[in-house]
Amino acid sequence: MTSSAVPRTHTPRRTRSWVIAAFMTSILLGIALIVFYPIMLLLFTGLKSPAELVRNTFGIPQSLYLNNLIDVWQSEGLDRYLVNSIIVTGGVVVGTVVLSALGGFGFGRLHFSQKKLWLTLLLLGLVIPFETLIIPIFYMMRGMRLLSTYWALIIPQVALALPFGILLVRSFTVGLPQELFDAAELDGCNAWKRFRYIALPLMRPALVAVAIFQAIWSWNQYLLPLVVIQDPDMRTLPLMLGFFIGRYTTDFGRLCAAALLLFLPTLIFYVAFHRQILNARLTGALNY
Image 1 (cartoon, rainbow, N blue to C red):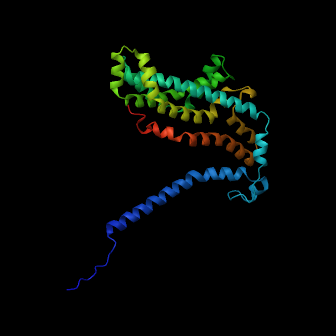
Image 2 (spheres, rainbow, N blue to C red):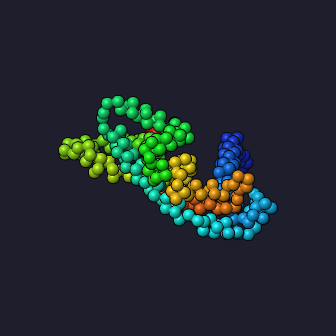
Image 3 (tube, rainbow, N blue to C red):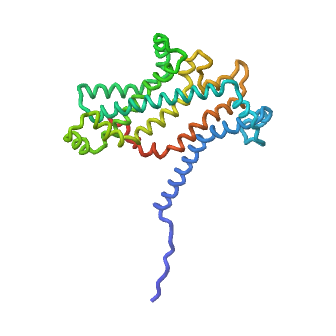
């Protein structure tokens, strides 16, 4: 008695899965191209000479032209702008982290009247565009005589960052074990001690995530310094980009080189701390 071999054929289900996988891969590759091509174009433009930029605008540079980076690095006032950006970014990060920790713990673990109302107001703070507030911020800073000062840059950015920071920390704090706080309360710990010795060490991943997001956002802030800073010595690094844009011409090579110098610190900062962002459970950060 002989047995005949049955040839294997691809089932329609397996073929359909392969087609779906190929289609999704193509979509992801297209998204990656859309995201990374402007960054590569910025890099290519900053490394081209003016003649090559005219001759080969969108292609890969034939030779590395580093004069654009050297000229930008040696620009007058660059060191002062760098110091201003570091001071402003550091002040925004510290203020946002401290107030977000206190506010997140208060909304997550304390009970007070009109709590839902205040949470709703915080959510409204997330949907108001920053650009609609720039004129009121200018008049407020002028009324407080803070124009062309570090406070004119730090205070508005901290205020605008608090809704996101408080809600993120609140969501993280709500997920902490209730038994820890009950045991501390039975031992006689007041609200401040429960925050200082229990909640604060455990909410560190969320605070690190808040610090990273606000550092990147503040470092790249352009509109606010443009409006509230009138003293040239108080300008920040993003304002340096406007030096290469004239009324009739634009120096694209030096403009892209300056953008690269501004972009690299944020990229390095994000790559160095991306694990902390993932550990912050951002997927549930805005649960109401």
